[in-house]
Length: 223
Image (cartoon, rainbow, N blue to C red; front, side, top):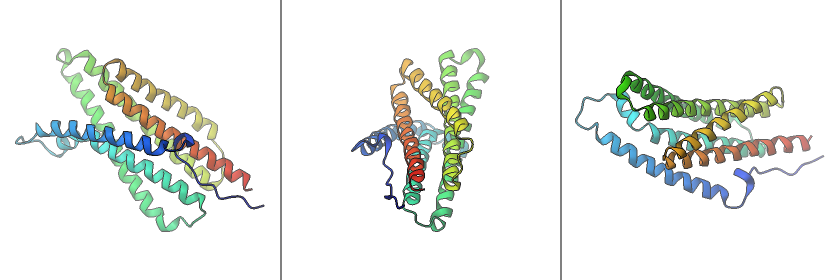
């Protein structure tokens, strides 16, 4: 029995939502890049090393890595849905993902570095800044968990195995819950841009989750 080739759609499958989400994220990216540029300008003329410079642009690099990672996931799903050979693009995709994961891991390291720096100041560090640093570290770790689970979902789709899907789903709920909590916390402390950006990324990757589910259902219907 033949089945119509399924073309995955972007978050929530509403017309124009993909363009709207990407456009809003690009606006946020420009704002974060401007903030990082101002921060990096303070390092000019100092003896700052590579680590200090990369930390200054940590948010810009992190946002860029997430854009590429989202694109690669979408590209992979479309590529798989058409039944085309994957080997010609497999190495390039995996290399791109590895680079993105390195950048994202650097963000985790940068958040941990900031938290330890604030702790080292003892009483001189504002309590609110320490709390923000803790939430930032928690948020970056939660994203790593979500991305790892998405990788496992993709491997499961390729192999046709459903083992562990319920466990992955439970951990995803926890991960996305932590991300929503981080966004709500930032909003409550007046960091509205960070909160808005977080909600947008949760929506973007939540839509990707729907694409995985539709791909799985389409695969079953074709059997």
